[in-house]
Length: 188
Image 1: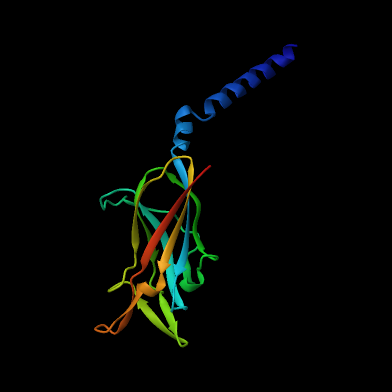
Image 2: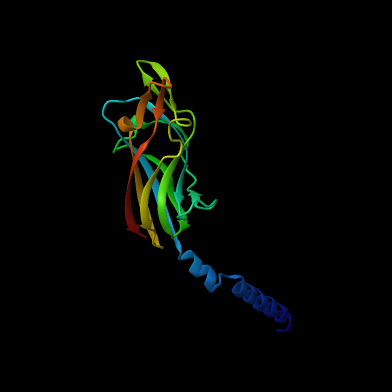
């Protein structure tokens, strides 16, 4: 029986270290402050059918002022150039998939576009300006409180026909995206 005494001591020390190393009540409370968000992009179009947009990121604004931490990236999983006209109701582009964020008040949501935006007219590619005359970071006011332990599905509708114009003075096509946002809350 004496040879089991060191094993008992080792087992007791192991149990104590597991108890102390486990999650504290503060850690468990912090997990309750998070929510999950999914963002999809779909297009609304009438006449145009080959408009390509260069998606770099999706961000939300969690602070009313323009401080450096006001905008938070949702780490878009699908980045690159996509034909916006293919993103219909039945085939939206998933930009963010169940990304966990702090449950907070959200003021705006925005797309961050790159400079590889263009449209195809009669098999001729025309560049769409989003820097000098357009809008490389179109946003939409949503003003909603995200509750903890919820899942939010956000659909950004991109109105293709209303977003493109021709600037005769500069002789260029301009992309100024018109966005509409729908938010649906789902419980875990």
